[in-house]
Image (cartoon, rainbow, N blue to C red; front, side):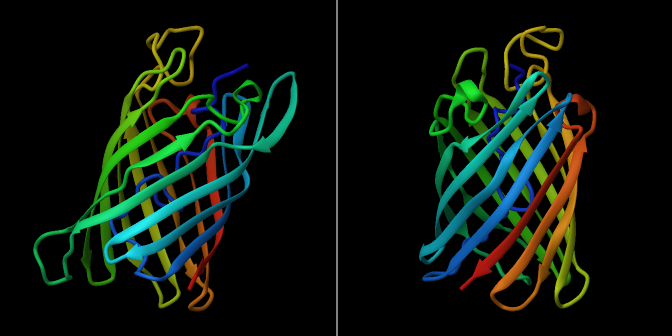
Length: 250
């Protein structure tokens, strides 16, 4: 079995990107992303179809998070695998707020846990619990928004190692309904063995990549989120990836 990403778990932090922002859902409101996402790497593909990413504003500056995916995975010589993926829970806490006229950014801590509810033997899950401990920042400048940050993945399991992730997004509000953005990201090696390891060729090197995407507001309730991209210096880990969602806000 090839190692694709961290199995078929799609490591999204802030849909439609890997990088998140520090802004929580408003108190008493929901933000639900009904999505599909996947990555093609070295002839294999793994992803989610469909998935539900639900976020609720529990109290002021605190957002609760639950992601429930149906995962799929396919690689050479093996039929497509499909079933329950790894469930994720988390909580975003914005501990620094800021207006557009303030010189400082908004800042939030957004830890989450991924539980091994997917079948690791079928590459539908990782087989172990993972945790991500990131800090996210954001500053607005008129129609422009810049946000980013990063954190530390606790990544147990045979052949795995803990690793760092960092990313940044620049977004522009092109029209009243359409915002476009670009993302760059970088992560250290998530598996042991080094660049020449025959056993773990896809995760044993540091990697970088980019995504281009945006948000289209159909109305106040329904929104389309999209992105696509690939790896850069080590593109064998990500020949192509995409994210597509119908978001509900209420």
